[in-house]
Image 1 (cartoon, rainbow, N blue to C red):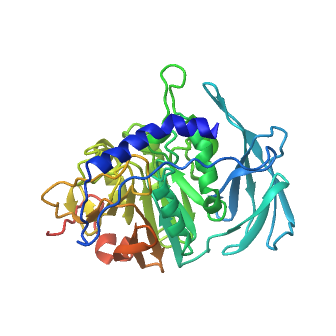
Image 2 (spheres, helix red, strand yellow):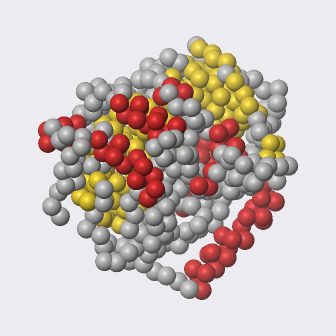
Length: 444
């Protein structure tokens, strides 16, 4: 199946690469000596274990002290059990979970296991086995208090650049991986979901991956699959129930003094929608004394000076931006546009010292290539922009200060190309005293 899938999908990639070879488009970044790299070949990761052994293992946070372990087996008789403990090869605890599967046209998924384990101690390494068979895995739980470090990567895919991004991410420790949509780029070719799961397993099995959906997760087919997200919801369940959400497409969670909101760009978001009402309630519950940092992730950016995907997040911005502004959300991360761009703090298309800082980070390694063209002249709201593959790191040091950095990929190293210190809006007296209906715009 892997060989067939590769032949089926590789032609568009080869065609895209051929265009780069015949019509090269070198693009200088803000570092004048750097030439942007082209898109690269798709990677198909084969299944090399027995049918009973776990594959595509990944973990995600559930509540303040639990972890969901997810994996797939080809053997339908395999048990959804996880054995775990704090010593290598010694499993003092055991949890039983649930399983599901799905069909998409002629494709039948393996048995998808989901088992929640815990309670777990913070900042602790656990060793675990899935289903009683196969290799031993390990993960480290996030800390319960600052400092904490998040890696943020959008539009990941499964190309050679994806592999490069993940290797660079893995060279420095972090606590939680955040992905604002477009995971596998399966686009209804279901074996690509399996290939993606195997590709990311070495990373997603040892640090929690928290994701939200992108347009490549929709996979709608009229009449037969009208609602979409069938594979995404089955393979990547997130803890939406714990935040009062009724959909896996939007939810929130808290970790180490940080409240993180994962919004759904492709779920209804107008003022009458369930997502809007949920967001209102979720923001109202935040205690900025206990959780001084609030971060939002979504797929289609609300602010974007790239020519690609212009205006696609505008209707969602108009519906929800005021809610985030009044709640003093600190940062908003988006994907979708295959480039990196960092904006100043903004509200309603104007620089605003009490608005969120907006970052587009849709540059993980997708198979469609990079979004090369930015609008000219540069918007005064856009402070750094570059069409290169890379990843971001948000290190929150304490209740008041954090550091954001963007690491550009090249063949061997991840170069820190952009960085900025950020102060939490909950610590800024001017913002805490600004009435919710007053817009405190900065002079540009």
